[in-house]
Amino acid sequence: MILEHYPHTDWEHLRSIVQPLSPVPATHRTLIKGGTIVSMDKDVGDLVRGDILVEGERIVAIAPEIDIYDVEVINATDMIVMPGFVDSHRHAWEGQLRRIDPNSPTLLDYLNSTHFSFATHYRPEDMYVGNMITALGALDAGITTIVDNSHNARSQAHSDASIDALEDAGIRAVYAPGTPLAGEWAHHWPQDLGRLKQERFSDDNQLVTMAMMSQWDRDTWAAAREVGLRIITEFLGDDMGKLLPMLKEEGLLGPDNIFNHCTGLSDAQWEILRETGVNVDVCPRSDAQYGLEEGLCAYQRAIDHGIAPAISIDVEASYGGDMFAEMRAAYFLQRAHAQYRRYVGDTKAPASVTVRSILETATINGARVAGLEQKTGSLTPGKQADIILIRTTDLNLFPSNHAIGTIVHAAERSNVDTVMVGGRIRKAGGKLRDLDQTALKLATELSRAYLFARVGYTPDVFADASPQVVKA
Image 1: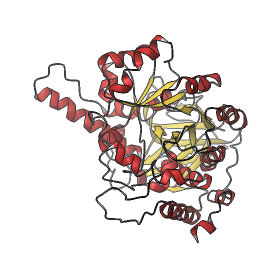
Image 2: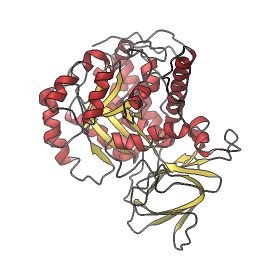
Image 3: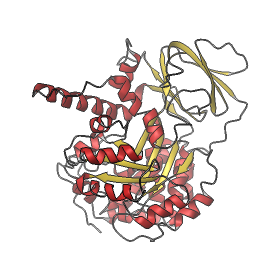
C-alpha cells in the first residue's frame, strides 16, 4: 500500500505542504519596534531598546527610535531582536531519520544507519520530504540559513526535488549536491553542476544558492571552480591532513573551500588552513557523538591558529536540530577543556570562551563560511532582513538580565516568537506561517514507512543498539 501511495515519479502533490510564497514587495515596510537589539555588527552595536526598519527584503535603518508612518509594526517589547542563526553544515535530506540511532558511538554506526541502508532507497519525493521537514524545523528554531550538504543526490530529479523543498520552505540556503556514499546512482557528477547553475541558480539574489560537496578529487574540484562554486569537504583526521601540503603547493586551497569538522589535525596542518584562507566549521555534538579522532570539536584549535570557525549541526540522525543546543555544547566543551588544562598545570591554557564569541560562531561566522556575509549573519543596514525575535517574558527566560547570556544559555525554539527571512515573515506569534502541518506529518510518515519497508527495518522506539537493517 505504501508504494502505491508514493509512485516513484509523482512528488509534485507534496508541494501543498506549504502555501506558495509570493515575493516581498520592494515598497513594503515593516518596523520592528522597541526590542533589545543584538546586532552582531560592531559598527551598529547593541541597543537596550531600539527599532529596526525593513523595506522589502532589506534592513534600511536601526536606531534607538524610528518615527515613521504607513508601516506594518511588529511590537518587540520584552523581546530580543537578533540575526537569524546560520547553520553552516547540515545534511537536510535525512529529515525522516531523526534520532534513528541516538546511541550511535562511531562514524561507521552512523553510516550503517543512514548512508549504507535507507539512503540507497531514497526517491526524489523522499529528498523533498526530508529537506522540507529539516528546513521547516530549522526555521521554527530561528535558523534562517542552512548550508545543505546534500550527499545523496542520486539523480538530476533528486537534486531538483531537494532544491524545490528549500525554495518552498522559504529558508535561505546554500544547496551543495554531492556523490552518494553507497548504492546505485546516476553518475551525473560533476557534469550536472553546469545544468543546475544555469537552470536553477542563474540569479544570485534568490534565497537558495549553490555550492558543491566533494571529497578531494582533482576533476570534481576543477569542475566546481569552473562554474564558480564553493567546495565543501568532510575533512577528518591526520590522514586527510597529509593531503594539505600537496594541495597548498598546487594552489588548490583557498577561500572557496569549506572544510567540515577538521578534527585530528596537527599545528602545521592548521597553519596551512590559515595561510590559504580555507573556511572551517566545527561540529560540537557530532564530533563527540561519533567519536571523530579526539572526540572534541576543533573550535579551540581553530581560534588558536587565528581562524574564526562557524559551528554547525551536521545531522539529526542522533540528536536535535536546533542551534541553541549546539551553542551550549560548544561553550561548555571549550570551558571544560580549558579548565582541565589549567588544572593539570598547563601555563598556556586558553582563556574561557564568552557567550558573545559563541554567538558569533552561530551567526556572522556561519554567514562568512557560507559566503553570505554580505547578505546575512548580522543586523546591518543594507543586508537582507534575516531576523528573529525571542520572547523574554516566557517563564524559562524571565527575568532576562543579560541578553546574550539569555540567547546562548537559556533560550530554546519555543521562545522564538518571530522569524523573518529576506523580509518575509515565516513564523509569527510562535507559529510557522503558511504550513499545513497535517499534510507535512502525513508525507513524512509515508516516506519513512516506505524507507523502513525497503530495508526491512522494524522500529523499536526503546532500542539501545543501532538499527538492524538490510544494507545495500
